[in-house]
Amino acid sequence: MLIAPSLLASNFLNLEAECRMINESEADWFHLDVMDGRFVPNISFGLPVIQSIRKASKKVFDVHLMIEEPGMYAEAFKKAGADNLTVHLEACPHLHRNIQQIKQLGMKAGVAINPHTPVQLLQDVLRDIDLVLIMSVNPGFGGQQFIPHTLDKIRTLRQKIDQLSLPVLIEVDGGIDLTNARAIAEAGAHVLVAGSSIFHATDPKSVISALKQADKQ
Ligand code: DX5
Ligand code: ZN
Image (cartoon, rainbow, N blue to C red):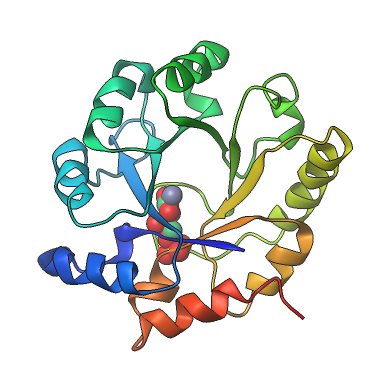
């Protein structure tokens, strides 16, 4: 199981220490949530912040764009240090073009879907992408409750991916903690994103280690 702590829930007053904690932990990726106040009703952080923290870690930077017209900024996110760039299906009328652009820039291409979007809509891009980000809350805010129907979506998508033998990772994002991680792993997820459950814990590193074991036993 790959673990991607979402920096959105970290202490922005002490980002250097938060980065160090992730570096020293068993976490695999940094999950970076970019919001534009248009696609989602919230604004988070953007390019300069990602560029700064890029200097503080060698781990994979997994950038989740919750923005309209992501194609306008793909190159800038590459320059800022993104390894994976994920765009929302709901924000992209020319999704295939966005995916090609991301790959041409040398990044892994991800497509995110909101809780109301069926996984079947990914069918015609599944061969072109590296990861699917299944939102298990409505995007825009950390600290929300996991939507249980997500488990069915993970199972359906995992079946499809296995059936076609595609190297696509299933990443799940929103409301993940130690009470539901195992069920999400069993449903077929490869990557767990977690914000609040990691950064609001008294011992974040041990939560990361425990999440990492979610697919064991
Ligand atoms: C929500 C973001 C998530 C969020 C996860 O819009 O995409 O990455 O930060 O935070 P928790 O784990 O607190 O739900
Ligand atoms: Zn996210």
